[in-house]
Amino acid sequence: MDYRRMGRAGLKLSAISIGAWVTFGAQIGERAAGEILQRAYDLGVNFFDNGDAYADGQAEIVMGKAVRSLRREALVISSKVFWLVRRVVEDEVAPLAADLGLGLVTWSPLRSGLLSGKYLSGIPQGARLSLKGYTWLRDLLTEENLRKVRELQAVAADLGVTLPQLAIGWLLRLPGVTSVITGATKVSQLEENVKALEVPRLLTPEVLERIEAILGNKPEEED
Ligand SMILES: NC(=O)c1ccc[n+]([C@@H]2O[C@H](COP(=O)([O-])OP(=O)(O)OC[C@H]3O[C@@H](n4cnc5c(N)ncnc54)[C@H](OP(=O)(O)O)[C@@H]3O)[C@@H](O)[C@H]2O)c1
Image 1 (tube, rainbow, N blue to C red):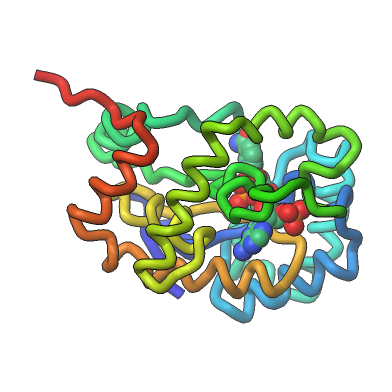
Image 2: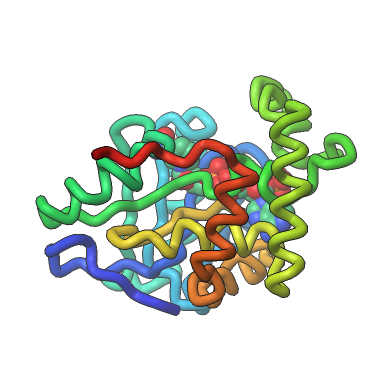
């Protein structure tokens, strides 16, 4: 695991962290959540994110029980204030945070699973977008988004990594990002995603330009 200082504060967070939104208390119960947290902890994850609104409070209860067996003083557990903004982060928020000595944590790196490629040929049973209460997320499945996902998958394949790894690594490359909060319903997803730590070194300027050409939303440079 890679540990990064939270801005100028003494706190060090694992560069890959895990959160509870949708998953804990809604898709998976105490036992599965406990297995994921224990495996994450064994892989060096020390930062767990939650929110009091997640699963109507159940996510906090499930996580609270699951971390009982872990060394409490080794963990950082967060809740939150409001939404993290889109591409303004790179140009505006990250430099400001660096000036102020703040660290950034970024959430939903796979856009609820869209950037795993699993929705390219429909909505798999049991996946987040199939869940009652989260059908609003299906708005993500536009032709344009799916085309971008397909093209990004080709970039990932050329780099010899998976699309989730590319998506998470693309965030990890940003200076000022202390931790990327991932989500998982399976230990195998967590294990795959943690390998994204190897991706930033693969992101040469040429690869980043290829990604920008696919995304088509590069923040404009100021004069
Ligand atoms: N500040 C906020 O308002 C805010 C908002 C959102 C999230 N967050 C935090 O960020 C955490 C992570 O967000 P998120 O869960 O939305 O992250 P995400 O990375 O966008 O989506 C995670 C979901 O994608 C699927 N997935 C993950 N890895 C995969 C892989 N390797 N292959 C295929 N599918 C994979 C799983 O869903 P399925 O198995 O169901 O497909 C998993 O639950 C949350 O738990 C929460 O703590 C905060």
